[in-house]
Length: 75
Image 1: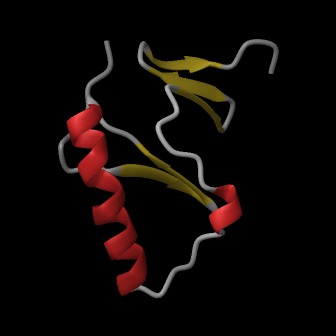
Image 2: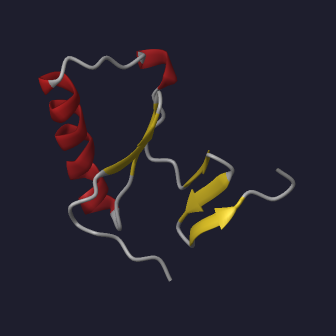
C-alpha cells in the first residue's frame, strides 16, 4: 500500500518532475499548482519533454504506477 500526503503534488530530482494524483480529479488539479509554483520562481519546462496522463513511469530506478512504487526490473 502506498500512502500519499495531500500536500505533496509532485516528485522532483534535478531536471525531472513527476506530477501524480490518487485519482483523475486529484491529478487534473495538480499540474496547474506545480506550473504556477514553477512560474513564480522563473523555472522553465521543455515542451517537447511533456508527457501527460501516464499510468506508469520509470523514475530513478523505480516504476511508479497504479499499484505503487516498485523497483525497476533488470535495472
